[in-house]
Length: 141
Image 1 (cartoon, rainbow, N blue to C red):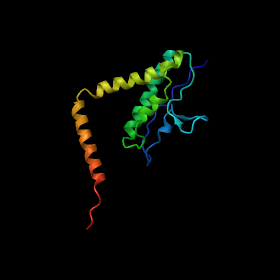
Image 2: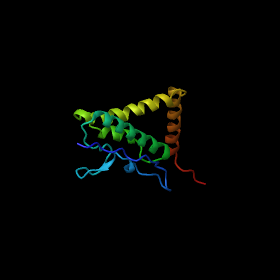
Image 3: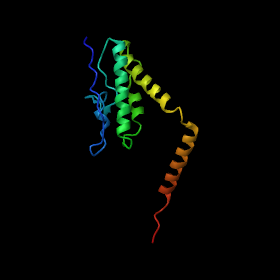
Image 4: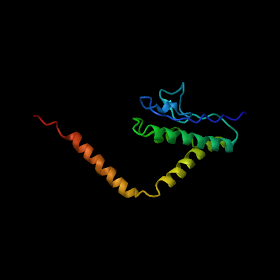
């Protein structure tokens, strides 16, 4: 079995619209599913190669988020995790192990100066204010 190639490294800059998540190298439309499958990886028998490729996939995901911060594709990480076959046998487990390990490493580095609970409180306050604004009827002038 030949090893799957590493996808070319690239940016996902809006041009002028945000790039769709389907541009990610691990997302694909499968004939047996009506929506894009967010974790389509090639078969492999080399766990180390799969692990390294999983890290590359995580890098593509992170660059996608950097380049498309206002992307309407909310909950993309949840969709990816939902499509991962965590029970895949053998070497294919390396893909998701490498993917999620790199995300954990990047999170660890990026949250060093963040008061996470304060951030959650501010986020909750902001979202509550938005909900309140949406409930108000338009003023008549």
